[in-house]
Image (cartoon, rainbow, N blue to C red):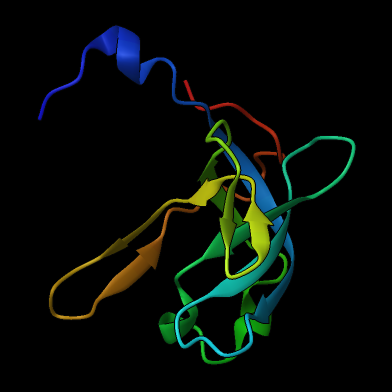
Length: 110
């Protein structure tokens, strides 16, 4: 399915720095992230990346790319305010999309 350039321009992609990460209880896949996107207060983002991070504390301090303008969605009782960009292959290879460390939280992708 193709989208127009105008539709794509509506997607707000920003750098976020993960401040905290914890497993959502009674799930195998979900992590609750606290993310600095250069705003007044951190955002809570629920992400299905727990299988790739048995020790989710290694995510703290990482800068990643996020979709910042999705409608909030409640997942397992937690409101999520964005979506983490990540890649995975059918073979199980996984990668976060990480900008250079010098790029500050809140920077908008162009």
